[in-house]
Image (cartoon, rainbow, N blue to C red):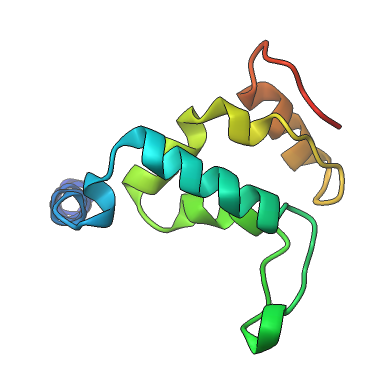
Amino acid sequence: VDAAVQSLVSLRRRRNALTHTCRLPFEIHAFIFQCLASECPPGLSHRPSGREQISMLGWITVTHVCWSWRQVALDALELWQKITFSIGPAWTDMMIARVHQRPISV
């Protein structure tokens, strides 16, 4: 069963890699995510102009879209430099761990 699940995950990753958004360069994805991070920081839950409510995770929800978006968001260290305490100590610790030794903003 585990082998079948892993095969399915692998096939889905390959299929997603063919989409237009996944073929964008890392730098463009990272820039788009930085723009999103400035508009939807973690810890804010609001309803912008009649749309659905934004998650408390804010821009971090892009890591839930697909494997390639997750990898870009995790590897773009500048996204993690603005540390927030409003979504809990576990998230704060994770953000600090992700920036490695880069400057942070609290």
